[in-house]
Each structure stands twice: as structure tokens, then as C-alpha cells.
Image (cartoon, rainbow, N blue to C red; front, side):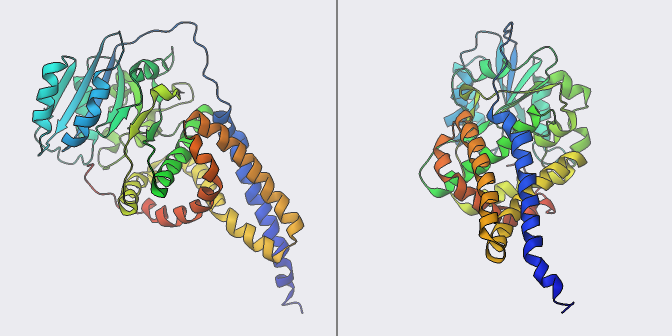
Length: 377
């Protein structure tokens, strides 16, 4: 009988573990994500229009540039600004397309690179060259497959700067299209943004997205650019911000007119490859960030298995209220946050996507140990 005793303790141990996991999840929603859900931009005493250099790196992106570049070129920004496109050894019609744009838009500055940088894989070399050529202190970065959500993108993003601010984090959204994959991609993008924007508001900024990111040229030069991460194919956005961002030098801008929009992948396999490439940089984050992100992900992953086993093996009258508490808090935070990021149409499906995240972690966990591909496009 002594041998069988642990078995009889198993249901209550599982329930206690379920309660602990739920408490940790509620901590993240109450301490971190609440900050974004209730975030109200601070009213500035004075608004200044800084000179801005927009930088776009392109490699065989003629199709995307023809559709998206005009959105950057026709920005309504009365102050001095320039649009820099770095053509990195393109083999398609990118060069000729940019020459045609240049005839109409005099503010377009073309940087042509015809060689690869030995020992510097990925996007960091062309981006560094673009920053080197930039005339202005405020740098605003986006990708060739992105288009500003409005003609006031530059205006809204640069308005995030204040006396001590050197980094402004924006939101890179995806176009809303029919289909479940579109909703999956947009939910994952929302979920990632909820984390990095909330952490920034909590004074622990750890990443930005290259689709919509701004920082000062002096910050880049002071930290010797990407020199410490040049050997890695990725990290030009998240790892660089992870290295240089502090609680005092980082701000966020979530005005819908300051978003950028991209076309999401049309096939699940293509999206998987894209996300796998992004996640290969996670292991290089600061230890504190890796712990916080890891604890959240692991408790998120364990929540539903522990809920089901507790429901089966323990008393459902105790299990369901714990589940309901997390459901209500999470739903409330998601509702407010999705509205802020113009993703309100996803709210009806958030509970289903939350269950899907269990599979998501299984699929993408190996990416943390995978060797990244050396190409950036």
C-alpha cells in the first residue's frame, strides 16, 4: 500500500501545479501585458519635426518595390527627409526600377552594392551601408515588402522621440485577407508585439521588428554598429535592440497611421521557414530576457495539458474556476490590445488561437537550436 500512495497524491499534485502555472500566467498578464492594454501615449508639451532618413534594403525585390516604395516616397512630412534604398547585389530589375523612381522622386537616394561582405552574412552589411550614407540623425527602417499604413507614417514615428529617447518601436502588421492562415499569422504577429511592446513599457525593452523600427544614428555608431553580431545571419533588428535598448532610451508608437503593412505568406511551409529564421536569434538574448520569455512560453505551453489532466483526475468544481479566471483576464487584455493594434477582428477567435499556441511551441521550439541560413532574402 505504501508503494501506491504517490498515485493517490497525483491528482492533487497536478491540480496544485495547474494553479501555479495559472498564477504565473496571470502575473504576466497583470504585470506586463496590462501595461500595453491600458497604454495611453503621453501628451507632449512640444512637438518637433526632426529630419529623418528612411532606409530600405532590397535584394531582388523589384516586384515588392514597385508596389510598396511609392508609399514611402509620397509621405506627407514637411520637414527634411530622404528615402534611401540599398540595392544589395540584385539580379532582377531592381536597378532599372529604382532609376525610374529617381526620375520622379528627387528625395530618393539609391545605394548600389555589387559585392558581398565576407564574414558578414545576412542583412547587416547593406543596412550598415545605408546608415553610413544617411544624412540625418533619425533613422526609420522598413523592408521592401512593407508599405506604410498612411501618408503620415514618418510624422507619427518620429514624434515618438523626446529628450532622452534614442529608440522608437513600431508595429509591423500584415494585410487582412481571407483564410485561416492569414488569421494565424496575424495572431502570432499580434502576440509577439504584445510581448515586446509590453516589456518596453515595463522598462525591459528587448527587441524591435525591422519592418517598422527607428533609432538614432549616433546610437548605432556609439555601439560600433553590428560589430558584435556581424557573424550572425539575423539579429539586425531584435539582437541590436536587445544590446542597446534601456528603460530610459526606448519609446513605443502604436498610432494606426504609424503602422506598416506586409503581405503574409500564402503557404504554411513558407511561413514556418520565415519564423524559424527569426527564432534562431533568440538564444543570443540577454539571460534575464531569455528567462522571462522562457517562463512565459513554458507556462503557456503547459496550461492546457494540466487543465485537461486536472479536469479528468481532480474535482472539476475546483478546476473550472481557476481556468475561468485566466480565461477572463486573458480575454480582457486581448480585447483591449487587439483594438489598439487594429486587429479587433481576431478577438472572436482568440481562444482558439490560444489553444493552437500549444502546437506552435512544439513546431518552433527546435528553431532555438537550429543553425540559421546565411542569406537574408
